Length: 73
Image (cartoon, rainbow, N blue to C red; front, side):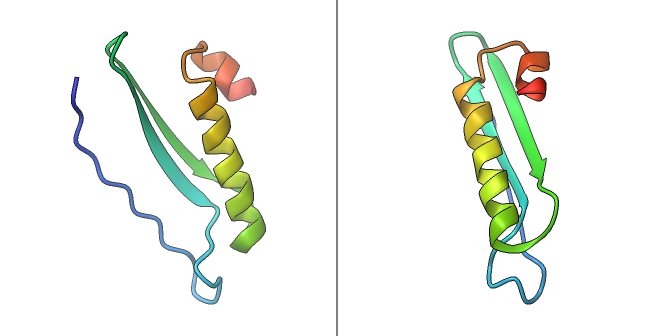
């Protein structure tokens, strides 16, 4: 399965390019499944971006888990 998509996140003015908003799409070709992840970490700036990236990485590492387990993780 091939999915076309685009992701754009823009930081607030004055945040030096850092944003707590992030997204990722994970395709599982073996199971014909797709996981769309959208994160809006609380706050703004560098610390919020660190949390957002950790959240995306966690979801990526656990993408084959049941969705409820990912959400609770």
